[in-house]
Length: 128
Image (tube, rainbow, N blue to C red; front, side):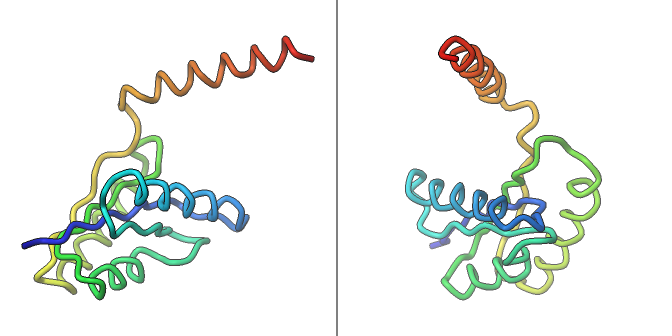
């Protein structure tokens, strides 16, 4: 039986509150998704990095790890860096399936979120 884990993978920031926000998203995903093993990881500027997060998940029994980029578009980091890291980690953990999803771009919920943000701005403007 395989145990699936999720990694919410973000760029990372020198501003720790930005990294903490990603960790909170990962915790919300864990609570709401039914997946027990969910970690945040960062390309740079945040802790843990993807190597450390995946090693921790494997230690906890994960045999399948889904890396979900917390990136809007398919830029250089997702085209070059993430596939290289996933390939290297797949070789380091041969009994573990590691795969990455597409970025958030193109997901239908993004249009809903953008509309909601615009409406919130209009409502805030009315109350001032």
